[in-house]
Image 1 (spheres, rainbow, N blue to C red):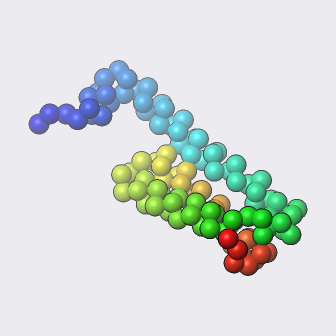
Image 2: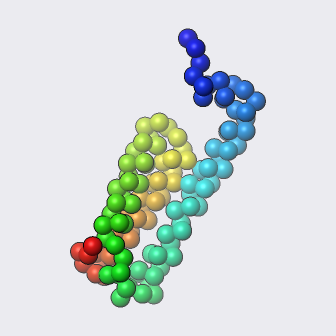
Image 3: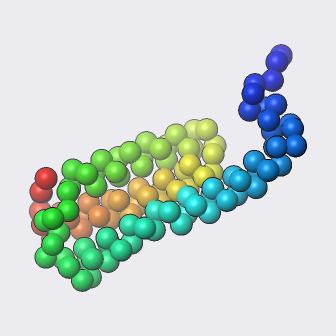
Length: 107
């Protein structure tokens, strides 16, 4: 049976580079979502009175989309996808919870 394009690439010398790139992408998947930490700090620690300025709908959609990407990453067994999106999902849910606590249901 003929190899798929991705199988041919992995068998080539480029395949070794892709393995290293995947490790880098796991790192990015872990570090990237932590950009949300400054929003969480403002929401919970320094400016909770401004929670109504955050969009509950937007953060809820971010959380739902992260959940879908997390599930997809698990299904295709791709560590960078499910690690990064799993962390994003948790942080986005924390934003949703914080908005609900400090501002109630807003749009």
